[in-house]
Amino acid sequence: MTTSQEELLPGTRRALLHRIAVAQAEGRAPSLVAAVVRGGRTVWHGARSSVDGHAPDENVQYRIGSITKTFTAVLVLRLRDEGMLDLGDPLEKYLPGTGAGEATIAELLAHTAGLAAESPGPWWERTPGSLRPDLSDVLGEQPLLHPVGRRHHYSNPGYTLLGALVEELRGAPWAEVLRSEVLEPLGLHRTSVQPQAPHAGGWAVHPWADTLLPEPLEDLGRMAPAGQLWSTTGDLARFAVFLAGGDDRVLSAESVREMRTPAAPAEIADVLDGATYGLGMQIQHRDGRLLAGHSGSLPGFLANLTISVEDDVAAVVLANCTSGPLLGAVGADLVRIVAEAEPRIPEPWRPLREVDPAVLELAGQWYWGTHAFVLRVTADGLLALGPLTGGGRRARFRSNGDGTWTGLEGYFAGELLRPVRRPDGSVSHLDLGSFVFTRQPYEEGAGVPGGVDPEGWRGIAD
Image 1: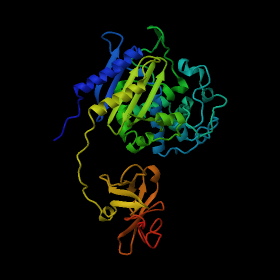
Image 2: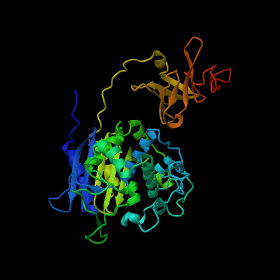
Image 3: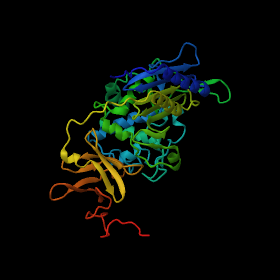
């Protein structure tokens, strides 16, 4: 028996509408529009507006600010996957003479290149990009504020450099490359560099009075790869599906998973907030779940995209005001509402089609010293090692095809798991990066940390 998961329950839909209604009212946003994705498709759309009868739909464009950075990161990862660059390469290899060339591509993606947060004044978000025609105008005379690679310091100029890198290696403008390599393959026809009707106007709301001021809609020029794009909840919902599962026409599932993997050392405040940064994606731990995505803002607009891969739920929230509603909190709440009200229904358990007896022999309980571990053979053909009870080191391992296994995560990432066999072919112990796992705690005759005292285990006499 199966249950349709295409539609949300009425109570869930009302809770979602209530959340964005509160956000629009308390945040005093001229309009706020949102969408929720589950199971690879949009399952809810909602909007609130200060204009009666004119609530925006999923096709109305808003400026999405720094969510643009995630699109730029996708272009860079495509270059890596095609072998045109390595993330460990210094920028100088491709763009000499910037003054920031010692930073690697990965460090630019993760905002750990030591660059300033903003370009030299005047404020680039509210002035024409023509004031900064060259990279030197964006970076200034001293681009680096911090040692390269030592700390996470969010940098808009860093993504300008990444956009220039894309242009250098593709031989075409960033906007053209983005359109042909990402927007068109993913069907994001309402995402564009310049606004296309219907689109919202950007407004500043007076902090102490219910009055409005129109914000300028500037072309950011060189800074475009950091924040230029316009999009809709409909398009960003499709983009969220891609960021959760990949699309081989653009980036593989493995590559988008890499984007969602922490790549930056966290500041103390970030540790307390449960936040870090991957490769073009923000990552946070909130309400007991891991969320990935990106926020964005430009004068007149706020944007947020939030994904919980584990829950198979994503949310998009857009507003046309410079400040007011906290869209990161709204996006996280929309994900939480759906995930808690209608938890993901797991796929039916199915046994493995076949299993190698030599692999099955490894399954079961093992000891590292006196610490009890369990090794399981998982349905995807991996081995999973973890503590029998409680917390501790755990990891999955991928077969190397020669009887050994390589760790995929955590403390044992990249470490080799090697079953050591006796002369008769039976497994004596597991060697994991020099750690010896045995079937009994401190097993006699095993290597370190095997039994040492010849009298073995004992009690204490009265």
